[in-house]
Image 1 (tube, each protein chain N blue to C red):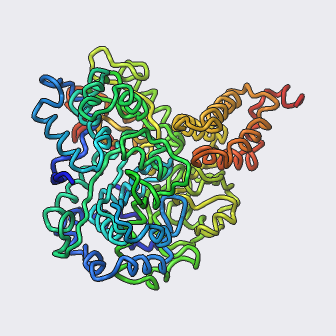
Image 2 (tube, one colour; image 1 turned 120 degrees about the vertical axis):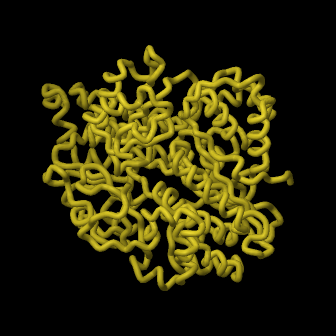
Image 3 (cartoon, each protein chain N blue to C red; image 1 turned 135 degrees about the vertical axis):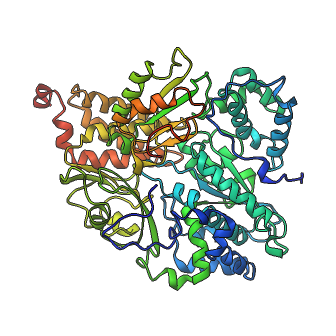
Length: 429
Length: 194
């Protein structure tokens, strides 16, 4: 269990403040903590008013892309007479990220409340919560909460005595990283292979079951109730203009205190790694950090003073992503680490686009032979060439996701790669 | 719109529960099968959307899905067997072959890789006397390497049937294997720091 943490750094536990409290899982315990008050309030507001508050708060999508949530909601058509759907993306599968799992298993009612408020804002009649199949225990906890919500008039027909109705259904995934991509997720929900589709059509035009749909991440939806209750300005007391609020951080790799934390956006990354997580267990310097989950670019141990905001990490040449720093100490074999990351993407490529299907496995094969000390002189150039060919040419960003860590590791740790080449070939090359 | 059944009747199935039971007759003519199908259909606007839930249901009973089951699921949902096969083979959690009673999946993705996951995997293979993916002679174990299980702060993460074991080190493996032998589906004493 990861909560509460001993930490030398001040955490700002808003969204996660009831994690670790077993009673918070039950409706009674959740209500005692002020649960469902925001939903009650939302029933007195128009969908446009709810959307406006979330827009004003500056909340950005927590699934990795950081798209403004209120703006996304505003894309949904109004009074079009069609059924609308909300899909909650609980397919958490970005290597490094494990924050949504904690939200689900400790505060399932928070997630349900967020889903309902979002559904009201976008006019959805049904909220589907797509949970990755491996999260079985989490699904059981969430299912018990959904049942409680139905039995107490918080879901289904006539919510809280109003005339508004909305269903909530948990849909278990079955093992596919790509189902975390929004169009892949909707395809999977519909009983298809989780293959992303080229946009347009955008989800708000024709998403799940061909109807206007919004897909939001667990943490995004879990932030909505507190924003509605306390207002946009309250939320903006933390973070920066472009990255307001608090954020869950999943910290893993070589750390004394790995786990989930919640911080106001904007702390230096080094504070999170060294003060909160205690640095490396070996006591050795940090060699590299992948700050936003495995599909973001490497930072070196000297680049950790950047601010942990969307813009701060972008300026540093990486991305906030899912806020999941993977920390590697001085002894880490960067080639082996990169090979393992690339293997994941090769395994998870859905196979629709050649650049991704072939590119990811080419990358793996080249990295494997470099790792084995059998690299060829042209291999590094070939890897760069593949990076070029795999960027921005595919339906979704899975191919790009391997390029970010690969290209940055080549740029920043080239010596590590060259050291593994056959000595004679390096000289010849 | 069709009647929506209370969600309490459609819990997500214990997917990897390697139950090794069989259906008493055609799947969707059994009480449980009928009930599951009706419940799932009531939650979606299309029949096809019940496909993943139904494949999950079959696996929860039998521990794996064989081609004949895919045909039955296809018929129940007005799909072709080929289509159902294409779905069952796309998603990694559907076992297309029988697995041991304890299906051990060792995450070796990056955060676990940095915390000796490969050693954990090899230790599991050695302790169970199996090669990756095969069922041990006594039918107890199948060990495979898994992609990210989404619990990276607790590396190395090992999934045994439906249960996560966290912070597994190579040294804990013999005790975990010993405890699993003879228990039904993992169990509170299965070892590891879950």
